[in-house]
Length: 190
Image 1: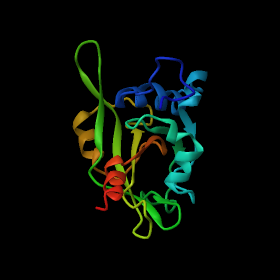
Image 2 (image 1 turned 180 degrees about the horizontal axis):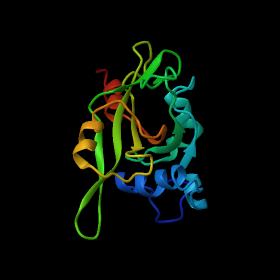
Image 3 (image 1 turned 90 degrees about the vertical axis):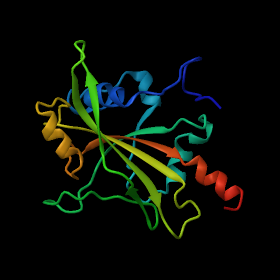
Image 4 (image 1 turned 45 degrees about the vertical axis):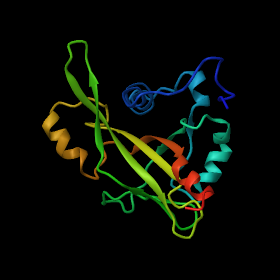
């Protein structure tokens, strides 16, 4: 089913570069609100709280989306302690977001064909052994690199930093998606 908040023919499927350059950069660095239309697509909520992913999905109309779409959220990450670099990744009752692979840099190509790292993309999976929905949700998290402005000077330094747990800005945009493969396997008894 199509998103009921979208104009006819409109599909909200931004690229990784667009998420970082136009949405995250605008909200974090420029400190400007998004265009009114985008408020129906980029929500503000805490994805690291006591709500289960399914509850968040239902609260924001996820069941009305096409299978390959997800919900987008602007949120602030919480450190586990003031001096540490570890991030609070708990969700719901006994669940957490588990990172399955190293973060990847997101690049922007200018008009001359030069590529500049502007952000990081981290992929997470919902883990909760006591839940029927264990493995049933994915979360893609987008963050800025550099001094928080999304502009980097040293590409080799960025490559090193991409694999670290450090964040340049604790504000991120996340895409919450159902793991359709997990739900199909459960329906088939696998």
